[in-house]
Structure formats: C-alpha cells, structure tokens
Length: 211
Image (cartoon, helix red, strand yellow):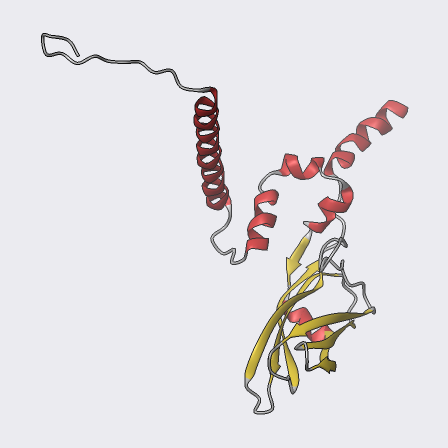
C-alpha cells in the first residue's frame, strides 16, 4: 500500500486451466443460444396445427425443398405420407397376454396387426393399457407397430398391404395383469412416389436435341 492512501493494484495472470475453462464456457453458451434461436425459427415456420414432435420434424423438412431433393430416395419417400385416421377401419389389431413371471414382475404380450387395405402403413402407434382383475388400469405402455424406416429397436418399418405383423412386448408390473387393451393413437399412410419434376422439365429438351 502506498503512503498517499492509494491502493496497489496487482494484475494476476490467469492460469492455462482457467483460460481453458472460460473459453469452453463461452463456446457452450454460444452453442446453446444458437440452438435456441434455430429451434424458435423452426417452430415458427411449422404450421400451428402440428400437434406432435414427429410432425414438427416432418413439416420442418418439408419447408426445405432443396434439402429434401438432396436426400436419398429411401429417405425422401418417408416424407411422402399423410395422417389418415379413417384407415383404421382397414386394420385388424389385437393384443393378448402370454406367460408371466410373478417373481420378477415380467409379463409378455404380443400385438398383431393385419393390414387388410391396399395402402402402405408408414406409421402406426399403439397405446397399451394393462388391467387388473377389477378392470382397473395399472400399467401403460406405448409402442410403434409401423415406422417409415426399418432400423434397430422399435423401428420396425412400414406394413405392406395384406401383410400381418406380430410384435413381442415385454411388460413389467408389480401386480399381475388380468388382461390388456389397446388404442390406436396415430396412423400415417404412404401416398406413393412423387413425380420427379426435374425429369419432366429436361425430357422435352432431350427429345428435341435428339431430333
């Protein structure tokens, strides 16, 4: 401390670890702010009638025609579907309980879906409810019977016309289930391949060149 009453200011250099932590924190904050801005923008361009996360993703991609054109055909075709609740009349869905293990609380069930119509079911979601002996709901489980693509896990792929799909389901409940009911919560049907407008524009010119 100086005699005139002023205080001494000491400039202490930050260590390498401190500088690294501050830099990473700044980068993380920037990424969070950027991601939040992109999410808000994506929600604004989506139609307000969209009422599920899956629809948000699908509609967001549909707002980007150039991006959709760059997708492989297998992925681009998955976006060409529509929600059709009326198609449920052409589906036969049944769920039944199988053997149970009372010691572990595991109980098996199987869901069966028959597509009796002429369309490809690209997405089908089911809500399963397990009931006790008094028909009281004691368990709830959601499962995907059909998905646009066939991958791992519950991505089982679409259901073709006149095909039957059986789905094994593992249930866990501390109380024994007496029966199980099901509810169809969403149906999307593939609308078929879309004509390639770029080919239709280039076809006349190629014919004229050939002539």
